Image 1 (cartoon, rainbow, N blue to C red):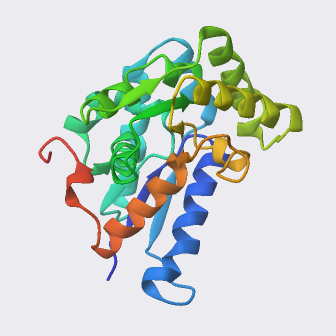
Image 2 (image 1 turned 90 degrees about the vertical axis):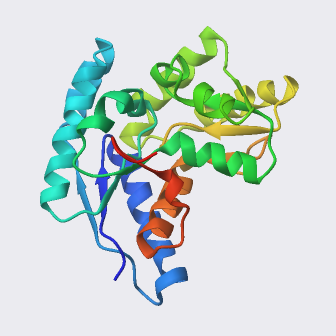
Length: 242
């Protein structure tokens, strides 16, 4: 039997996209209509936002751990978090987690290596782009992470938090993200990391000036492979496993 996937969710749109992809792509490995058992838990999104606004990563971690314990009691075998920003709290969460996790930036970095990308632009919330989540994981593999300047970080963050997490997809915002990706291209990037689980709802390889690394779908596929026993166990992390 496939393993039971636990989703530690944050914002509805990104978590739903991740969930849907696990279910829809499950058929490719398990047959018609089949997918692994999945449980998902999230506190109020506002609780996470309050912690992030205060730069309270321990608070973020405690919310993640509360979900982790509930999912463990529900029978999950391992956990994923379809929210890039929350991964800033991973070092706090890991030693206390009741279950192992997949790390979204690890998965994206491995895919970048597989596709032989070397220099990637990063799109995400200002909280994420200002953090070391992606630079550290990419640098460990000899890869470069290019951030947008402060003005563009703030506007991309506004689009995410005021529009995308609410399911609002405006043409002018799509055009803005397209322009930021074009700037990455002009800075010699060979790909762009969609480091927000909602950005893939409006940006993809069809409308991006650069090839995309879709963190949401990459995480979903890695979880699916792990659940059916076909993924590299090196993605699996907790306090005791590296």
